[in-house]
Length: 280
Ligand code: SAM
Image (cartoon, rainbow, N blue to C red):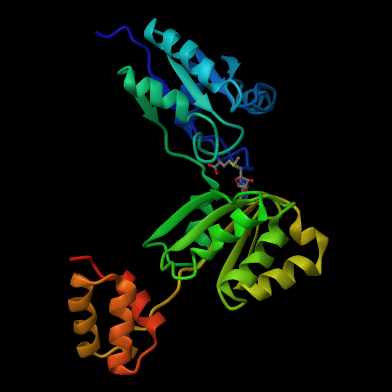
């Protein structure tokens, strides 16, 4: 039998303390050590569940060095759990460095399913979930933020962002500027907490809602942007088949332009349709 320890990735609640799984409590109770983003913050959760396992910090500023120390402990036989301040570790949270060194060293990494704000928001936002992109936090600098939003002009999948209350109104205002005020947006706020709110509407309506009351900007946010919809019924089978043939030889932009010209359609409609087609 192997004497090497195992690393458990353990999600914790994103607001409602009852959102711990039985398995999460039992793993945190049984391991030898818990690596936590902020040990003081996590103490509250430990007390709530009567867990007295020793905590050690692992955050953005010490992860490189800490990962090596934890790897040694695992190799000496300790079982370790990784938690973050809220939700699933590694999802816009520390832990990647540790998981990476463990995998490379052949240490078993066992993830527990559990709370994650992005997935919780997505499951109830009312936007398409067959394809979605998780983009974490937008860059802080305005130019980089603008560029990150501009690429969504033709995105057909739902895009999910995390956003801070300080920036939420600015970000939605930038969405209006870059993607137009009609783009459907959902603001998922304070998930699993007393004042949980979903506000959905056009980007313009979401901005007006945020600006209408300072309280609307308070709390934690997941911001979801709908993908662009393509009305396939506007495009005849002949146009579709030309587009497909041209796409085998030409870049999509060019193929869409030629087909649009030929059938008197909008280039953008054909471009978006092309994005949804398989490449071959
Ligand atoms: N690892 C976490 C997860 O699995 O969701 C995310 C950590 S990230 C540092 C924190 C961000 O997640 C917040 O700024 C907010 O955008 C989002 N978030 C976390 N809890 C939330 C909640 N209860 N309601 C809405 N958004 C939340």
